[in-house]
Length: 180
Image (cartoon, rainbow, N blue to C red; front, side):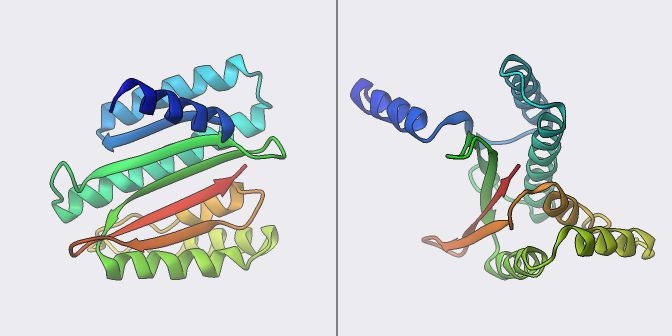
């Protein structure tokens, strides 16, 4: 990337009110370091405590899910890359977006899950969360108890937004945006 392209990227970030952006392979220590930077930024911006906590929690949940997925699928470093953007929208709300390469069938399942959660109000999400919490956890399952996406939806002030872009090759790119 040359200097004029970098300047154009900077202008785009400023125009889109991008606070933090990351693109590349994501490790546990990198998640932690970006999380520290995010916390510092939110403190400097004097974000409302509840909003700051929710932004941080959603960032952590999304990035840990991406890392866990890539590890369990045995993805290469290139395929385990994540794209994470935290920005402000026109109303001043925080928007946490993250995306990663997925197997197309996994991406379709995620889209379906997001779609089903997006139609629920806060009370229904709370009830679903409690119901999921009471279910016995399948010890053979490759994932957690299934609470993460529900918790993200509970923290969101707007319906979750997800896309699945088919890429060249056998994988797809799943993106999730959460408004806080």
